[in-house]
Amino acid sequence: MKTALVTGGGRGIGASICERLAREGYRVYINYNESETAAGKLADRLLAEGLDAEAIRADVTDAEAVRRMMGTILAKSGRIDLVVNNAGVSHYGMIQDVTDEEWDRVFDINVKGTFHVCREAARAMYWNRSGRIINIASMWGICGASCESVYSASKAAVIGFSKSLAKEFGPAGITVNCVAPGATDTDMMKELPKEASELLKEETPLGRIADPSEIAGIVAFLASEDAGFVTGQVISPNGGLVI
Ligand code: NAP
Image (cartoon, rainbow, N blue to C red; front, top):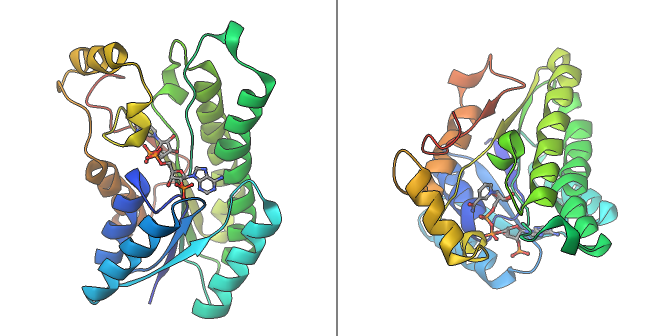
């Protein structure tokens, strides 16, 4: 059975990705940091449906915790076929007001967390000479967002990092791609001022924000056999806001 790890899988887009991958036949490890109850409930619900899932805790900013998490997965499943780096946080505010602590928090989770998980995944995937890594960036990492400069910079870093890894891992049969969602209906969107989220909807050609399942669908495609020759790419489901 193919094995997948989804970071930040207990809620939001990550939970939708976990559910979709479980339905595609993966044994899914649902990583969480704070959302123990939500991750546990999701695993129980999937198991009750005869699917295969397990919640596993690690703070992705903690290199040692990530190493232990991957060790547990390899001990239990013997392999890791797919890693989805979904854990992330946003930050809204003008650059004059951004503190060093806020900058570090966003980069520690969004960029360093992705690095920690990719490093462990690569060590395991190299043995199999195959694997898929999918990093969740953001459309703002492509085009930049006013008042979200720290977040945009972190997601641009994720895109650059992923393109480099695609070149480095290609010869080992490992693909690395990014999904760069537009505004999506999760807790993260609630952190935006109401006027900003209304404006986003208005400016989006499709006139709405995404459902998390629509992001999960792109992840499922990149994980599928059909995407075997796709690497180093950024697919941005954003309703046409960024073209
Ligand atoms: P969300 O609902 O706020 O969920 C954030 C997730 O990140 C949670 O599962 C959380 O896990 C996890 N996380 C945060 N810090 C963590 C840490 N240190 N270690 C492990 N997990 C951690 O956000 P979302 O909208 O689902 O976002 C998921 C991804 O999509 C993020 O990378 C985000 O930047 C990206 N994205 C979202 C949107 C959007 O409009 N929603 C648009 C573009 C891109 P715990 O609760 O367990 O701590």
